[in-house]
Image 1 (tube, rainbow, N blue to C red):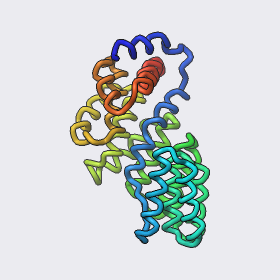
Image 2: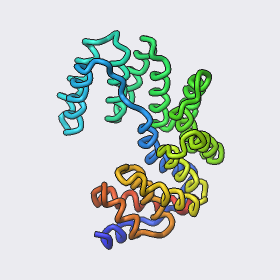
Image 3: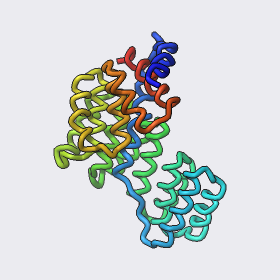
Length: 262
């Protein structure tokens, strides 16, 4: 398998025109998943939670019509329950249905869940590569408090914009109060890598990895750094623990292209 993937990657050499935009795409591909670790559904009624869980399961198994119909029924039957709107928004976000997610976050804001709604919409903005909008929304939240989720999110936004030193300052603020915060540790390591400091990024991921063995995103980010640093065999081992051959090839190819941009 290794030889097959390496052959495919070498047949698509990095373009000499790889731009700063490539860095943004790479960072977005990896980071928002980790940022989501700080977020969770807030459903008070176990009945809502069960129905939403069933809908999500159908969507995950590919029965989209059935799954989304259940979710829409929950929304229709509970139009004034802010906690349900947040839960539905989180569910749609997890499925990549960002327009629907934003609609439910907006509804939650109207119902009084402004902080969670703005935080959700900021996450949507990051997922859609709109760092400027994300910073505006995080700015609203920072007027009230500077939570770990907000600080991590602001850092991600600045990394997307290529302002890595500023981003790293926000991650380090999180780590000052919570030295073991995995999203911040991961984001800091990735930010160091994208800023051109691959050795420091590799050191940070090496230290983080044993404490996050069950975190697939950390595994994949560690694999990317290994690929960037020339440890293709180590990268393939980690990529292959979560991905099929086609996705492994894609990630190796992305790493090869990124090398020329760093």
